[in-house]
Image (tube, rainbow, N blue to C red; front, side, top):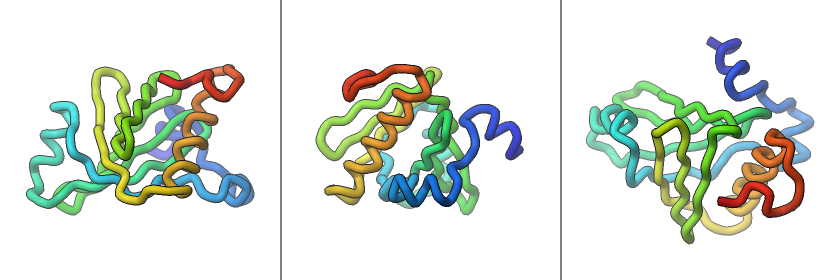
Length: 134
């Protein structure tokens, strides 16, 4: 399982890399819309659905829970399409999506978003600050 995950989204960052980046995790995000495949999982539970994202060297893992089970939306950077509209973020890949509201605003959310865009850009071989903006 770990090898398969590493193959899809790359290895986890080392402790020193995480320290230099000042973290690789997102703030807690509230899911307000999802593609049908993901929505079926979320509908098993009547609670408000939250998720967190983890940056990897070649992709992102968005984890969420339903009925005490943890699920992951695994997205390699080459498939990731990211949109932002205020505090609303949208992650799209391979016909699936998650739309979330960032529950924490400010520098933490901004730093995570910038790391996400930088990682996507560098993994795709682009350069410049707007190389991967959608």
